[in-house]
Image (cartoon, rainbow, N blue to C red; front, side):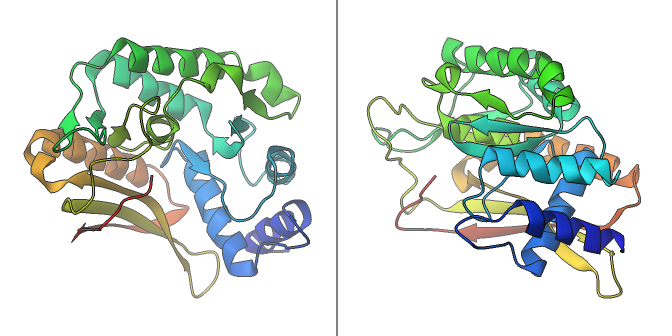
Length: 263
């Protein structure tokens, strides 16, 4: 079997939910995402193809590792019922940078605000969340060896999951809102610049185009976030040049204005 066929077989064997298997295109896209995580091009991916649980995603990852398609260092994380495949080394490095040099812009989008604003410096609550994530990942070695998912349940109850996902997925911009007051936000009819990054996996003659990143920033805050966006882009380009599994890194920016923004 070819490399692509092994990835597809693993997905279809392990990730069945409600009698639905991932399609071949979905399986190839997932494979490209997992390769990107393994190569450090993105720190983690959020599994959202179907209702497969963390144990099934762990079986899929273990199958890939058994075929030596990805490294043994990757792990599965269940964050309040949301499953991620994580590169601990990359995530830990990113989170340490968040604490040490504020490499990520956290934007307050509380519904009560007239417009979004950058949180600077980070609040004690946000710093605590980052530190707890670091502790969990540093202690995850035994779980990885036992091929079991890392479950994050009670500790994440007070966290803003929108912010946590932004940090885990490696976005240079992430949003925060006071979820104890409202889950609504102030992004309605706010011009947003959406940045995407995509690659091609040349697993066959046609190649597979895959979007690795997609995040937004309010246009009104572009000047304040410009340096962080450029730093993120340069770091991604540097990591991309250090590998040869994926090709044609492309960035795209578009502006959208929506009547409501669901996070």
